[in-house]
Image (tube, rainbow over all chains, first blue to last red; front, side, top):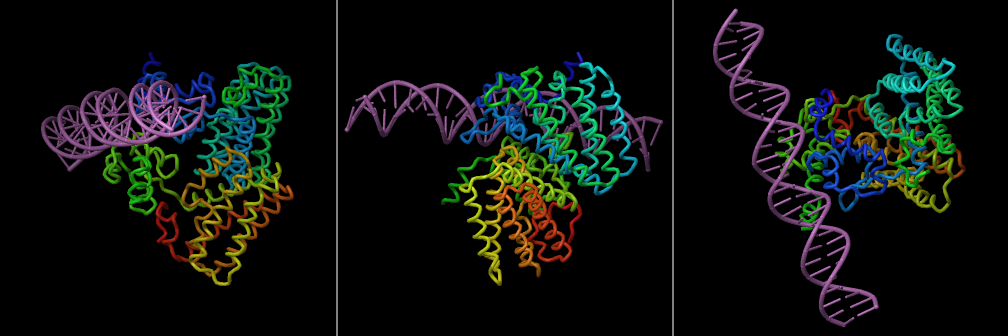
Length: 250
Length: 250
DNA sequence: TTCGCGTTCTCTGTATACATGCTGCACTCA
DNA sequence: TGAGTGCAGCATGTATACAGAGAACGCGAA
């Protein structure tokens, strides 16, 4: 019922966008595959006008690529593309942290971040971390990063970070779930949480270079997780990036 | 004739996009002003379907902002937004330079960049720099930056740099023409050209940190130019960003 | 005079019809 | 047998008609 309401409330464009994105991320549409409007109409059940809007939106989201002669194809990524996107995200978050540190933030505005830090601490401190705890971690982690970015007080920067993080394999939480299957899971989580702690400390003390450097390094945990998970072939189903790779790893 | 052909060959969507962008950048559409589809239809003379596409494209170009209740408004920027966008561009170009340096580039692929450097040298070395020379500098400078970014060999990064540089006030050449009216013009040009030289040297010697740092600093020349031009009130008509400012400087 | 409700109008979202340009295949001619 | 040309089918680009939602204005009542 509420689901039906929700379905009705969102525009056809958004519905088409969600449906197509799902098809791409789940791998039902292969990288490099051309996707015609009519095909998209068949898939989504909405008419061509909103479908086109959705295709354009997915293009600048980075999941599709315009074909010069018209139409779109599913974008194919290399492992290198993914690693570069993570480094890119880290660089931008580093800039945000530096902005926050150099320009200074009020104790008042730092409070939510510290609360979030404490919540994460609680989760990480457990000896045995359940899948539910991992899931909670993903949520809190996303919140932490969002709060941090906001401290930069720079709309253009936040916009770009959001954009880069929209790629399913570049977001701060992309590989946390994949990591949960690794033996080193707990240790990586602890290191990541230490990064969180350090960056808050650096911002508080207005140490711009330190804040920037630690956020860059922080993003490299994601790169490490990705490499580990791919090499170990563990829980590949937890890797949202897999379907987008040019040559599948499996 | 050829113009009429060109007009016919481009799609209505592109034509509408160009017309609307021109209206915005020239200030005929004020920052914060709401722009309805029908209004855009009147302005551009094309029908609603391509107009909508154009509006969406301008939105993710960053010139328009979607209104939650539907429709779009012209985005308003603060001086701080502009300075942040320049710093953002510098950070990304710095990352590109670092990638190029750390990963190494062949002597072969460095050649066009060095040629470009030499051409720029020739322009900068003149005692008295004409307006035409400035204009040529803008072109060569854009080419230099494009070549440099390509050396990163990172499609995701290049994509983001292009995106950020699409904002009229964030591109590497945005304030070069405005700078031409300044007394310090020649000196600034020389410093910028030295940055160019240094970054090529750093890439050649695989000095990643140096390459990154100098590109960041390089972008701050643009910030300096902007501030100087605004403070001096010189040739404000050469500042493409002016029309987008929340509170006009004039 | 002000507030609230209703009506109307305008705008956006969606669907569909039409035209043009491209691609691929087949047939013909050398 | 190979290459070139023409035709057909289809996909995209564009225009327009229609419906629904939201905002504004006016009218009536307190």
